Length: 406
Image (cartoon, rainbow, N blue to C red; front, side):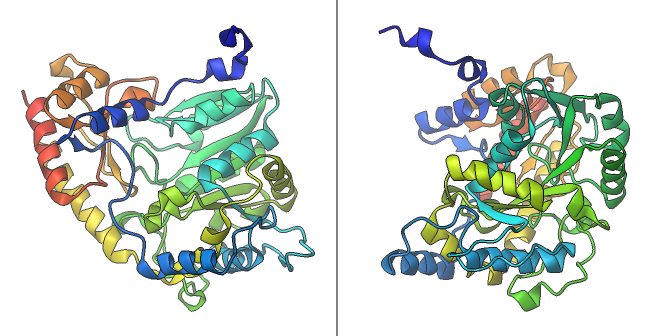
């Protein structure tokens, strides 16, 4: 059978992730230092692990409502109310689900994929930052839509001034990622307000991907929300500035958040999304026919995660960032990341190398990092993950600095 003839054009149009290629390289070479992937190097809190085991042993292994376990929905609604001032509605018992504006998703990637599918017709446009998380343009391709790139170099901030010229009659949404992957850049409160104002004036949805919101470093955090997160069992770190905290934002902003990065459980595939109730209804309908629901016992386990204090872990990662920046700045330009797990230094022009060529040279020296061209139309930078043991990270950075200083 000629299988190649049967493959759909949407699948042919997708590119393999360059992240996976370099990660596979790391796995194939024993002893290499792997600084390629945003995989937290800390363990899940023992209490949360125990809650997952308990849920499995209690036979909480069947389907949940498409929106998620009602108890988890209620907990998320309370956190969102305290943090953003939003009213997510009364969730109701599983037997009689009622419309709400928050649902549990299969990771933030599941939330974003459902959002793209609910919003984009063939030929429609969504504006995304450049550099971008690798899913952003590919999810548009799956919808036969177009991702319009907003050039954010050299500071990697998506501003209203940069976005406005890109809006057309086909634009459905603007996607803000803060803190950003691969850059770690954090939008200021002023930038968030200006971007939301623009989207409102042009009748365009603002999607705020905040997967790293609780992994924001000290100088980039906003003020503590008016609500008392600690009273809800959340550890209550001040978080990343967000357009969702602006007045009446619930009508115009779709917020995407998750648990994997904050709590070291990326493989659990758990996220959530909140926003206009009418849109959330459509995302829920699509989830019904795609992911069905997020993993059931792990949803129950998340009820115990809100009391997990990760502030010491965030501080440890900030110290890693500072050590990496101090050494990298001796040989190249690098923007200070305000959050997330990454630094995104420029490959010095004097080397005459692309990001891919530099990463291949680093791999030959036993260090795996990701070329900036995986995340961008430009291949001038490299992404270095801070999610590695301190000794490996320090040796890896030393190797990168040595190559850049050659």
